Figure 1 (tube, rainbow, N blue to C red):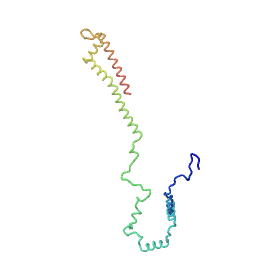
Figure 2 (figure 1 turned 45 degrees about the horizontal axis):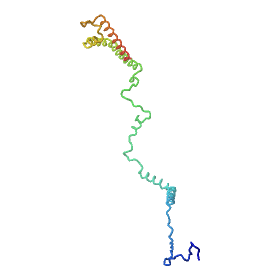
Figure 3 (figure 1 turned 135 degrees about the horizontal axis):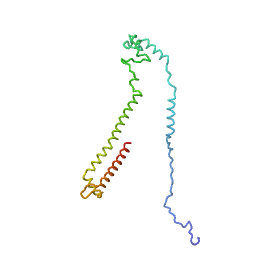
Figure 4 (figure 1 turned 180 degrees about the horizontal axis):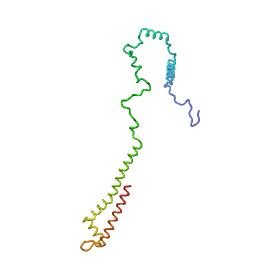
Length: 205
């Protein structure tokens, strides 16, 4: 008899037709994992053992006897064509001397071939003199050339018309210059010559 709200275990439904679950375990052989690091270490040790192995001892006596036999049979001697017969030529040849200096047909005087300091100074003085002459010629011709060019410009009709428009008080009704015209033209002419000369002197320095 059970209390209210509870059920006995015997009253629970059971499934008799179900079979119990059986767990089966099978053992497998252990798998051996290859240790590549150990294998590589063994290979390196084997290589070091081969390299550090003592070299094969050579039979020195056999080697010496072989050389003696070859020498006695004439195998180590030079051919007759390679043996010099005229030894006097080698003894008398001056070219084989350590301090040999070849003798030329015409001995060279290296001192006279090169320019002396006096010749260099003279050449520089000539160059400077020619440059100075050009500068003097340019200076002497600059001022007359400017005066001639300015005088030519003053005679052009376009320049005369410009002066009449700019300075009408310098001309008469007939278009001729009065005293003021000559004075103004002279002052302008002198100012242009002076400024042009200053510019040329500044550029020539």
